[in-house]
Structure formats: structure tokens, C-alpha cells
Amino acid sequence: MFKRIFHEDWTAVVPIIAFVLTFTFFVVMMVRAARMKKAQREHMASLPLDDDSSR
Image (cartoon, rainbow, N blue to C red; front, side):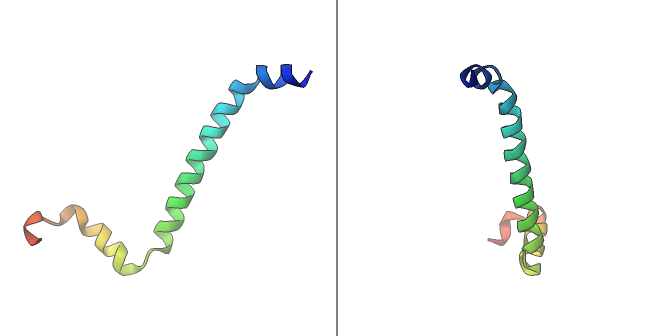
């Protein structure tokens, strides 16, 4: 009986796993961004504006 339940409903588990993984990734990135030091935040914010000639 349980084999039938697990084999028929496995497709419902895939979207749930994908959502949980995506949600976890974004939560971890938000926590890392919130805990970042001010100097590092300012450096990351100015990266797109830096030109390569300063290296």
C-alpha cells in the first residue's frame, strides 16, 4: 500500500523541494548581505563603477 502512495505522488515532491532550495538560497544571501561590514558593502556597491585602469 505505501509503495503505491510513494510512487504515484513523487511528482508533487519535486516542486516542493525546488521551492525549499530556492527559498533557502535567498534567505542565506539576505542574511549574508545584512551581516556584511560597512566597508565591504561600500566596496561591493562601487564595483560596477570601477574602471579597469586602476589596477
